Image: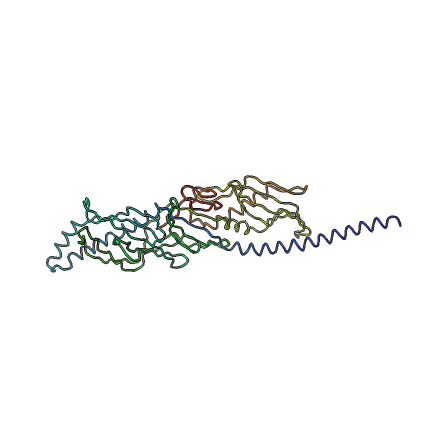
Length: 396
């Protein structure tokens, strides 16, 4: 028995040392995991994104607004012409002018500049007008609040604007509006909206609606080469309408920067695989035009994260599926000690959690038709590590 004491004493010492190390490891790892989770909660509140409205979308939207205002424009023009006539002659003069004047305005050009959109308008007073008037004006955008944009117009040097003052307001479909700017030299995109999108609780802000506040628009005098007005100065009153026009799907793009993608992964937190294993410290990167999700594989002792056993790297392909963004796991690589890892369960959970995070952010207000990482010819100004979604959104 005496000979056994040194051996037993050595075993007891080793066991004590192991328990001490496990205790230190548990404390340190728990503290690290707690700090990571605190950071994740902060990172997961909102996600920064950018929505790009294309040239075609803006031309269509502004032309609709011009067409909507033409009947009132014609009415005011007739009133201006016949206003000085006697009461007995106003009736037939009005009928004559009404037969002669059938104005049309076409948005012929729309070019993004640093301070707004340069809009070229062609005015014809009647069908077949041989001398239509071309006018240019600057369309500007101003943030009214977190969801509304004021659209206005002003004259450009050397050209009198056909319309000045407020034109309409736009309401963003989701999130909180932070910035708005035009995008010269950015492919199909003409306008960029900076948004903060909620991650935890998606908030519906309605469609990208157009409302018409009560205001007076001044239709300025357009002069010909002899500086004589082709028609008199007009004033047009437009009022808010309860019944908005039918919804129209317009092309647009969404850019999710890499920093926002990282916050998506951080928002996942910890994935518990079974009673003895969990995955945490989930981070996201980009590798060979794929999303790369890395994480720590941690052993649980009495339900507490105790020992880091290794790491896992999962490659994910972003895809468009049924109008939504879907993330599909392509491959998972393990770098761990010798043990059994439930790879299928982990792949399913990480794929489902990331897809749900992104799906909640877009909130069904953007119909996704294609997804890629980095810029493309349609959106060359996007960052090289951003995720680009192309598709359509809806405005009224």
